[in-house]
Length: 103
Image (tube, rainbow, N blue to C red; front, side, top):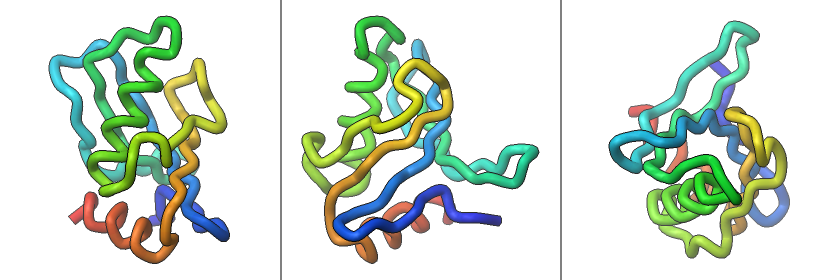
C-alpha cells in the first residue's frame, strides 16, 4: 500500500477523499483506490458551496495533525472529491501523524 502523502521540503502533500454533508466531521483512516493510490478518507458537515467544505476540511486536518488551520491548504481538486492538501510543518512529524491514523 502506498502512503496517502508525499513529503516536501517544509511539509507534506496529503491526498484526501472528501465527503461533504456528513453527520459529523471526522477522518476515517486510509483507503486504497482501484488504481493502487492511497488517500485519507474525510467527512465534514459543511456543504460543498463557496469553499465551505474545503475550509472545514482544512480545519479538521489541522486539528488532527496538531498544526494551525492556516498551515493547511487545498492545492488541487478544489471542486472534486479527491483533493491534495499542502500541510506546512516538520515533514517527519507530519508523516508519523498521518501513518498513525491508519492504525
